[in-house]
Amino acid sequence: MTQKKIRSDGSVKAIYGYRPGAPLHRPLIGTKVPAGFPSPASDFLEGMMDLNEHLINHPDSTFFARVGGDSMQGIGIYPDDIVIVDRSMEPANNKVVLAIYDGEFTIKRLHIEDGEYWLISENEAYHAIHIRPDLDFAVWGVVTAVIRKL
Image (cartoon, rainbow, N blue to C red; front, side, top):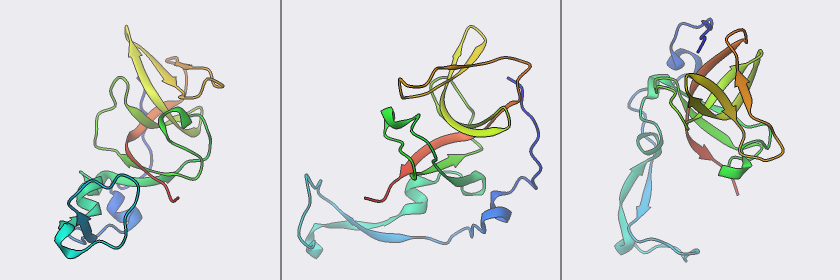
């Protein structure tokens, strides 16, 4: 797989202003909620949850990206969703990745078979993309979570 260097000081911290140790604590209800609930009483609280700690394993190499297409809707990634991308994770077979393909960003499932690389959509309307050695291609990171407003 060909990887091209992208101009950067390598620090997501410098780009996105991440401040280590800046928690985002919110109450976490200790019981599973099947379909909604009235205002929780304090005896249901499990404790406090930090969304940074829960969703981001490597803060200095993690960033967010807004989704702009429907090619991944089969796994619940829709237009205008925000994906969390970790650049420190190794791209591996069947991981969802943010890649640069032919000069454009794309989110696809990475498929590796017999030394061949493919980008697979999760929407039958799109064909798989075979990554040939002569193509401009680089994996920018692994998608670890999706954020969606209802």
